[in-house]
Image (cartoon, rainbow, N blue to C red; front, top):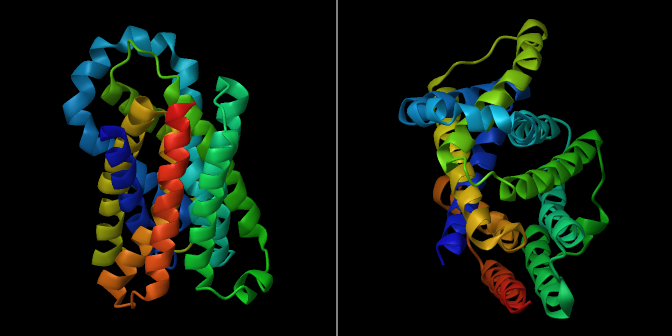
Length: 293
Protein backbone atom coordinates (compact mmCIF):
# COMPACT_ATOMS: atom_id res chain seq x y z
CA UNK A 1 0.00 0.00 0.00
CA UNK A 2 2.90 2.37 0.69
CA UNK A 3 4.24 1.76 -2.81
CA UNK A 4 0.88 2.59 -4.39
CA UNK A 5 0.51 5.71 -2.21
CA UNK A 6 4.02 6.92 -3.10
CA UNK A 7 3.31 6.46 -6.84
CA UNK A 8 0.06 8.45 -6.61
CA UNK A 9 1.73 11.26 -4.63
CA UNK A 10 4.62 11.51 -7.10
CA UNK A 11 2.24 11.73 -10.05
CA UNK A 12 0.16 14.42 -8.32
CA UNK A 13 3.29 16.53 -7.79
CA UNK A 14 4.49 16.01 -11.37
CA UNK A 15 1.14 17.15 -12.74
CA UNK A 16 1.63 20.52 -11.07
CA UNK A 17 5.14 20.70 -12.49
CA UNK A 18 3.81 20.40 -16.05
CA UNK A 19 1.60 23.44 -15.49
CA UNK A 20 4.50 25.43 -14.05
CA UNK A 21 6.82 24.35 -16.87
CA UNK A 22 4.34 25.59 -19.48
CA UNK A 23 3.97 28.84 -17.60
CA UNK A 24 7.73 29.41 -17.53
CA UNK A 25 8.35 28.57 -21.20
CA UNK A 26 8.48 32.26 -22.18
CA UNK A 27 10.59 33.29 -19.18
CA UNK A 28 13.45 30.79 -19.07
CA UNK A 29 15.01 28.52 -21.75
CA UNK A 30 14.66 24.72 -21.39
CA UNK A 31 18.20 23.70 -20.40
CA UNK A 32 18.49 26.55 -17.91
CA UNK A 33 15.16 25.53 -16.37
CA UNK A 34 16.30 21.91 -16.10
CA UNK A 35 19.68 22.90 -14.62
CA UNK A 36 18.09 25.31 -12.11
CA UNK A 37 15.57 22.65 -11.08
CA UNK A 38 18.16 19.98 -10.30
CA UNK A 39 20.62 22.46 -8.77
CA UNK A 40 17.97 23.50 -6.26
CA UNK A 41 17.15 19.85 -5.52
CA UNK A 42 20.82 18.98 -4.92
CA UNK A 43 21.48 22.04 -2.74
CA UNK A 44 18.44 21.34 -0.56
CA UNK A 45 19.32 17.65 -0.14
CA UNK A 46 23.08 18.04 0.36
CA UNK A 47 23.10 19.20 4.03
CA UNK A 48 21.04 16.17 5.07
CA UNK A 49 22.88 13.51 3.06
CA UNK A 50 26.52 14.58 2.72
CA UNK A 51 27.61 12.46 5.71
CA UNK A 52 26.08 9.35 4.16
CA UNK A 53 27.62 10.29 0.83
CA UNK A 54 31.08 10.46 2.40
CA UNK A 55 30.58 7.26 4.39
CA UNK A 56 29.46 5.39 1.26
CA UNK A 57 32.05 6.87 -1.10
CA UNK A 58 33.64 3.46 -1.75
CA UNK A 59 30.26 2.02 -2.77
CA UNK A 60 29.61 5.04 -4.99
CA UNK A 61 33.04 4.68 -6.60
CA UNK A 62 32.40 0.98 -7.19
CA UNK A 63 29.09 1.66 -8.96
CA UNK A 64 30.02 4.98 -10.58
CA UNK A 65 29.16 3.67 -14.07
CA UNK A 66 25.65 2.64 -13.03
CA UNK A 67 25.03 5.89 -11.13
CA UNK A 68 26.34 8.00 -14.02
CA UNK A 69 24.07 6.28 -16.52
CA UNK A 70 21.06 6.61 -14.20
CA UNK A 71 21.77 10.30 -13.56
CA UNK A 72 22.27 10.92 -17.27
CA UNK A 73 18.86 9.41 -18.07
CA UNK A 74 16.73 10.82 -15.24
CA UNK A 75 18.39 14.18 -14.57
CA UNK A 76 20.31 15.29 -17.65
CA UNK A 77 18.13 14.11 -20.52
CA UNK A 78 14.55 13.28 -19.51
CA UNK A 79 13.19 16.59 -18.21
CA UNK A 80 15.34 18.65 -20.57
CA UNK A 81 13.70 16.91 -23.53
CA UNK A 82 10.23 17.60 -22.10
CA UNK A 83 11.00 21.31 -21.64
CA UNK A 84 12.47 21.46 -25.15
CA UNK A 85 9.52 19.59 -26.67
CA UNK A 86 7.10 22.05 -25.09
CA UNK A 87 8.54 24.81 -27.30
CA UNK A 88 7.64 23.07 -30.58
CA UNK A 89 4.45 21.06 -30.05
CA UNK A 90 1.04 21.32 -28.46
CA UNK A 91 -0.07 20.34 -24.96
CA UNK A 92 -2.40 17.63 -26.29
CA UNK A 93 0.45 16.05 -28.29
CA UNK A 94 2.67 16.04 -25.20
CA UNK A 95 -0.04 14.31 -23.18
CA UNK A 96 -0.85 11.75 -25.86
CA UNK A 97 2.79 10.80 -26.29
CA UNK A 98 3.49 10.84 -22.53
CA UNK A 99 1.06 7.95 -21.99
CA UNK A 100 3.39 5.74 -24.05
CA UNK A 101 5.87 5.74 -21.13
CA UNK A 102 4.10 3.05 -19.04
CA UNK A 103 3.79 0.86 -22.14
CA UNK A 104 7.55 1.10 -22.66
CA UNK A 105 8.15 0.10 -19.02
CA UNK A 106 5.83 -2.90 -19.22
CA UNK A 107 7.42 -4.12 -22.46
CA UNK A 108 10.97 -3.61 -21.18
CA UNK A 109 10.09 -5.33 -17.88
CA UNK A 110 8.75 -8.26 -19.88
CA UNK A 111 11.95 -8.41 -21.95
CA UNK A 112 14.54 -7.93 -19.16
CA UNK A 113 12.77 -9.30 -16.08
CA UNK A 114 10.31 -11.76 -17.66
CA UNK A 115 7.37 -10.01 -15.97
CA UNK A 116 4.18 -11.41 -17.49
CA UNK A 117 1.68 -9.13 -19.18
CA UNK A 118 -1.24 -11.54 -19.57
CA UNK A 119 -4.74 -10.97 -20.91
CA UNK A 120 -6.16 -9.41 -17.72
CA UNK A 121 -3.32 -6.90 -17.40
CA UNK A 122 -3.66 -6.03 -21.10
CA UNK A 123 -7.38 -5.35 -20.56
CA UNK A 124 -6.51 -3.10 -17.61
CA UNK A 125 -3.96 -1.17 -19.67
CA UNK A 126 -6.41 -0.68 -22.54
CA UNK A 127 -9.09 0.47 -20.08
CA UNK A 128 -6.72 3.05 -18.62
CA UNK A 129 -5.71 4.30 -22.08
CA UNK A 130 -9.39 4.60 -22.98
CA UNK A 131 -10.02 6.74 -19.91
CA UNK A 132 -7.05 8.99 -20.67
CA UNK A 133 -8.11 9.46 -24.29
CA UNK A 134 -11.66 10.25 -23.17
CA UNK A 135 -10.30 12.91 -20.83
CA UNK A 136 -7.94 14.43 -23.40
CA UNK A 137 -10.40 14.49 -26.32
CA UNK A 138 -13.42 15.40 -24.16
CA UNK A 139 -15.33 12.64 -25.97
CA UNK A 140 -14.73 14.14 -29.42
CA UNK A 141 -12.89 11.69 -31.71
CA UNK A 142 -12.17 14.53 -34.18
CA UNK A 143 -9.59 15.86 -31.73
CA UNK A 144 -7.47 12.77 -32.39
CA UNK A 145 -8.17 12.77 -36.13
CA UNK A 146 -7.00 16.38 -36.45
CA UNK A 147 -3.79 16.02 -34.42
CA UNK A 148 -0.72 17.21 -36.34
CA UNK A 149 2.81 16.20 -35.37
CA UNK A 150 5.89 18.35 -34.92
CA UNK A 151 9.57 18.03 -34.03
CA UNK A 152 8.64 18.29 -30.36
CA UNK A 153 6.60 15.09 -30.66
CA UNK A 154 9.74 13.09 -31.49
CA UNK A 155 11.54 14.70 -28.54
CA UNK A 156 8.65 13.77 -26.23
CA UNK A 157 8.63 10.18 -27.51
CA UNK A 158 12.37 9.96 -26.81
CA UNK A 159 11.74 11.39 -23.32
CA UNK A 160 9.06 8.75 -22.63
CA UNK A 161 11.39 5.93 -23.66
CA UNK A 162 14.30 7.35 -21.66
CA UNK A 163 12.14 7.63 -18.54
CA UNK A 164 11.09 4.01 -19.00
CA UNK A 165 14.73 2.90 -19.08
CA UNK A 166 15.42 5.11 -16.04
CA UNK A 167 12.70 3.30 -14.11
CA UNK A 168 14.31 -0.06 -14.81
CA UNK A 169 17.68 1.37 -13.77
CA UNK A 170 16.25 2.50 -10.42
CA UNK A 171 15.12 -1.07 -9.72
CA UNK A 172 18.78 -2.17 -10.06
CA UNK A 173 20.02 0.10 -7.24
CA UNK A 174 22.85 -1.62 -5.32
CA UNK A 175 21.45 -2.81 -1.97
CA UNK A 176 24.51 -1.55 -0.08
CA UNK A 177 23.85 2.02 -1.26
CA UNK A 178 21.36 3.94 0.88
CA UNK A 179 18.33 5.48 -0.80
CA UNK A 180 19.19 9.15 -0.31
CA UNK A 181 22.85 8.65 -1.22
CA UNK A 182 21.60 7.09 -4.43
CA UNK A 183 19.32 10.05 -5.07
CA UNK A 184 21.95 12.72 -4.38
CA UNK A 185 24.60 10.87 -6.40
CA UNK A 186 22.38 10.77 -9.48
CA UNK A 187 21.39 14.42 -8.98
CA UNK A 188 25.02 15.58 -8.82
CA UNK A 189 26.23 13.39 -11.69
CA UNK A 190 23.29 14.44 -13.84
CA UNK A 191 24.08 18.10 -13.13
CA UNK A 192 27.71 17.56 -14.17
CA UNK A 193 26.59 16.12 -17.52
CA UNK A 194 24.07 18.96 -17.97
CA UNK A 195 26.56 21.75 -17.15
CA UNK A 196 28.18 22.13 -20.63
CA UNK A 197 24.77 22.50 -22.27
CA UNK A 198 23.72 24.99 -19.59
CA UNK A 199 26.83 27.11 -20.20
CA UNK A 200 26.25 26.97 -23.96
CA UNK A 201 22.61 28.00 -23.64
CA UNK A 202 23.45 30.99 -21.45
CA UNK A 203 25.71 32.24 -24.27
CA UNK A 204 23.16 31.92 -27.08
CA UNK A 205 19.79 32.56 -25.42
CA UNK A 206 18.21 35.86 -24.50
CA UNK A 207 17.95 37.34 -21.00
CA UNK A 208 15.98 35.43 -18.37
CA UNK A 209 12.96 37.03 -16.74
CA UNK A 210 13.81 36.51 -13.05
CA UNK A 211 10.39 37.41 -11.73
CA UNK A 212 8.79 36.16 -8.52
CA UNK A 213 6.74 33.68 -10.57
CA UNK A 214 9.93 32.31 -12.16
CA UNK A 215 11.62 31.83 -8.78
CA UNK A 216 8.53 30.17 -7.27
CA UNK A 217 8.25 27.88 -10.27
CA UNK A 218 11.91 26.83 -10.03
CA UNK A 219 11.52 26.24 -6.29
CA UNK A 220 8.48 24.02 -6.89
CA UNK A 221 10.24 22.11 -9.67
CA UNK A 222 13.44 21.72 -7.66
CA UNK A 223 12.06 20.85 -4.22
CA UNK A 224 8.73 19.14 -4.90
CA UNK A 225 8.87 17.87 -8.49
CA UNK A 226 12.54 16.80 -8.35
CA UNK A 227 13.47 16.03 -4.75
CA UNK A 228 10.01 15.04 -3.52
CA UNK A 229 8.42 13.36 -6.53
CA UNK A 230 11.53 11.50 -7.73
CA UNK A 231 12.13 10.27 -4.19
CA UNK A 232 8.55 9.05 -3.85
CA UNK A 233 8.66 7.46 -7.30
CA UNK A 234 11.90 5.64 -6.58
CA UNK A 235 10.46 4.35 -3.29
CA UNK A 236 7.39 3.10 -5.16
CA UNK A 237 9.57 1.24 -7.67
CA UNK A 238 11.53 -0.42 -4.86
CA UNK A 239 8.31 -1.52 -3.11
CA UNK A 240 6.01 -2.62 -5.95
CA UNK A 241 8.25 -2.76 -9.03
CA UNK A 242 8.32 -0.52 -12.15
CA UNK A 243 5.57 -2.32 -14.09
CA UNK A 244 2.99 -1.73 -11.33
CA UNK A 245 4.16 1.75 -10.36
CA UNK A 246 3.94 3.12 -13.90
CA UNK A 247 0.22 2.36 -14.13
CA UNK A 248 -0.35 5.26 -11.73
CA UNK A 249 1.37 7.57 -14.22
CA UNK A 250 -1.88 7.45 -16.17
CA UNK A 251 -3.49 9.54 -13.41
CA UNK A 252 -1.36 12.48 -14.56
CA UNK A 253 -4.17 14.06 -16.67
CA UNK A 254 -6.59 13.67 -13.76
CA UNK A 255 -4.35 15.57 -11.37
CA UNK A 256 -3.63 18.16 -14.09
CA UNK A 257 -7.40 18.69 -14.32
CA UNK A 258 -7.58 19.20 -10.56
CA UNK A 259 -4.75 21.76 -10.72
CA UNK A 260 -6.54 23.52 -13.60
CA UNK A 261 -9.75 23.57 -11.56
CA UNK A 262 -8.04 24.99 -8.47
CA UNK A 263 -5.70 27.45 -10.18
CA UNK A 264 -7.37 28.30 -13.49
CA UNK A 265 -11.04 27.93 -12.62
CA UNK A 266 -11.73 25.25 -15.27
CA UNK A 267 -14.96 23.26 -14.79
CA UNK A 268 -15.11 19.60 -13.75
CA UNK A 269 -17.85 17.81 -15.73
CA UNK A 270 -19.52 14.41 -15.90
CA UNK A 271 -16.97 13.44 -18.56
CA UNK A 272 -14.21 13.84 -15.98
CA UNK A 273 -16.11 11.48 -13.67
CA UNK A 274 -16.30 8.76 -16.33
CA UNK A 275 -12.61 9.25 -17.16
CA UNK A 276 -11.68 8.82 -13.49
CA UNK A 277 -13.83 5.68 -13.34
CA UNK A 278 -12.15 4.13 -16.40
CA UNK A 279 -8.61 5.03 -15.36
CA UNK A 280 -9.09 3.86 -11.76
CA UNK A 281 -10.72 0.59 -12.88
CA UNK A 282 -7.94 -0.08 -15.36
CA UNK A 283 -5.21 0.53 -12.76
CA UNK A 284 -6.91 -1.83 -10.30
CA UNK A 285 -7.35 -4.54 -12.96
CA UNK A 286 -3.77 -4.26 -14.24
CA UNK A 287 -2.15 -4.25 -10.79
CA UNK A 288 -4.37 -7.07 -9.52
CA UNK A 289 -3.30 -9.14 -12.51
CA UNK A 290 0.33 -8.25 -11.79
CA UNK A 291 0.02 -9.47 -8.18
CA UNK A 292 -1.51 -12.77 -9.31
CA UNK A 293 1.23 -13.35 -11.85
